[in-house]
Length: 244
Image (cartoon, rainbow, N blue to C red; front, side):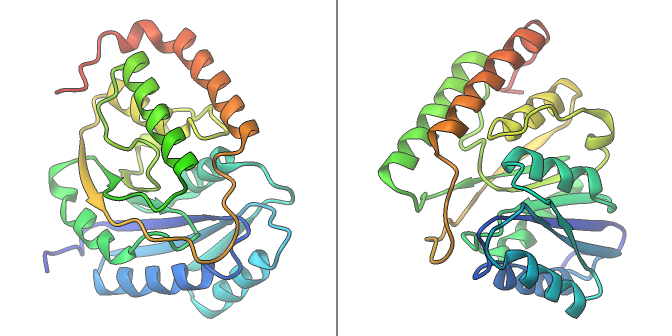
């Protein structure tokens, strides 16, 4: 294994309706991060006002593991706001995030960490999405729209498996509170000259909890955010070549 002792990693996980998932995710994350022999690490659960026992499970994990902490939202604030809290509160050199629904194999984080000397951001894409036909359609349509509007060339911009240099989040202001947040971050990173590398990851079937990602209300809010972003940053983005 390469020497990882000169940098540290924050791993955080948004969690909503994930009382049956978040324990598996956090335990696996701790296992993987320990194996990587980093300078330091932390694991954060961003509990987004879940009406089930997600918050209680998360608190029990924080009591069990010294390097695990929990941020609670008193009410559900939405996916984008939850991710924003994770990025803002990350204390380590690099920040990784994935969802708390246990649909990714966290062993694949090791491949992402191995790329740190060569790139600022590692962007996952799901090699085979374990979604309903409706979710697959909305995801495909979303990626196509972003390609047409902004020239984005990423395979799967909203894949919840990414690793960033944490200093990016000291240089940008995240405005999105919904699904557009991934695209917003990648677009702003590109404007600042951050480099990125794509890497395929496995996507696993959801076996517990409730998925809320493709609700009509979320889609509508995301469309509004795309329009607002295009008006504000459209001219700057014309100068960016995503094929570089």
